[in-house]
Amino acid sequence: MVERRLPRWSELREVVRPRRLPGDATARRLARAATVGDLREIARRRVPRAVFDYTDGAAGAEISLRRSREAFERVEFAPRVLRDVSAVDPSTSLLGARSELPLVLAPTGFTRLMHTEGESAVGRVAERIGVPYALSTMGTTSVEALAAAAPGARRWFQLYLWRDRDASAALVERAGAAGYEALVLTVDTPVAGPRLRDVRNGFTIPPALSLRTMANAAVHPRWWVDLFTTPPLEFASLRSWGGTVAELVDRVFEPAAVLADVRTLRETWPGALVVKGILDADDARAVVDAGADAVVVSNHGGRQLDRAPTPLEQLPGVVDAVGDRAEVYLDGGILDGADIVAAVAFGARACLVGRAYLYGLMAGGERGVQRAADILTREITRTMQLLGVASVAELTPERVRLRS
Ligand SMILES: Cc1cc2nc3c(=O)[nH]c(=O)nc-3n(C[C@H](O)[C@H](O)[C@H](O)COP(=O)(O)O)c2cc1C
Image (cartoon, rainbow, N blue to C red; front, side, top):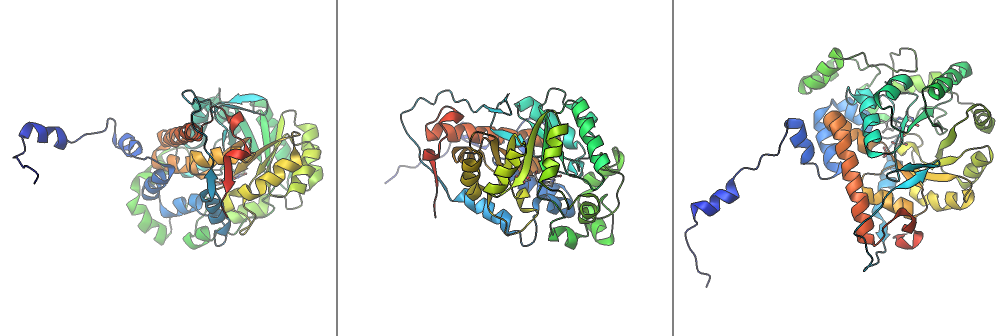
């Protein structure tokens, strides 16, 4: 029999004292997010549905995106024990310069849609944590404004080739003049992918208040107040636009881009050249032959061709094809630092993440992006420690396998 007694008030007081996290409501909300998935849930409640869906969604039936997630779920680590992991160094070198993590913040179009602080917030976090950030051609902050907001960040510029070659060349020139160290040429977007959530939501740029969006707007007044009380939301590098993303892509982008365009860029751009959207070993070899310094194994986060190959499964073939002639990065579906550790062990030099930081941005502006970065950093270092590795050089294929 257990002996029972009456509780003492002094003991109860210790337990029931409500613990209030410091800071304002946003800080408290962010502090309670333990994972990027938690940030996603906060984001879902914070912004209008069409905005969340534009960010969270993918093309078609979203099979590519689901498969990318499933591939990371199939990862099994092979830890070693009794290794000194008291000091773990997750830094690496990307395009010849130090990066504090094997991480790049991916180019994402229309970032000020998610939160008015937009690309500047992302750039400042990149600067603080010491990783590169690629500004999108579809950005809502100009190359010059981002350079001013994050002067110490490693800034890359993502380029879509336009039908109007002179206009794309002028943009490249501006990026060079504003101190961008690398061009990231995205090659998987000859036409827009079928983003069905956007179609169903009647999503346009700039956002328009239809009867349906108005009803949803009433639930997210703060987002709309921000929209109408801050500088207008527009593409910084494109003339003003009033239509859907798909119409814009199909009107402006060059569907006739070929390998010769990569060679031309190589001849005209003095900095590093990264080609993004590679899924095939022969394509990887070809763009490296054409002068690329790095390739990104990517299906655009599942936002272009649905049922495209899964980047994690394509990675070893591309790494073999490219050898040490170019760096190989990977993206798509990364929500956890352990995903990044796994991709590096499979041969990637680094990973790009898009949605992971955008969920943070929607959840709490710059502080939310920082929270996403802190969560990923913690997960990377802890996974390395539990794996028994102290540096990214020790992340070799022996440390991972894909369960069938
Ligand atoms: C909202 C959004 C906008 C994007 N815009 C661009 C873009 O303008 N240019 C580009 O090359 N990739 C773009 N991407 C793709 C990302 O660069 C990256 O390949 C993808 O987000 C990786 O998948 P993840 O979001 O699951 O991390 C975008 C992705 C998202 C989610």
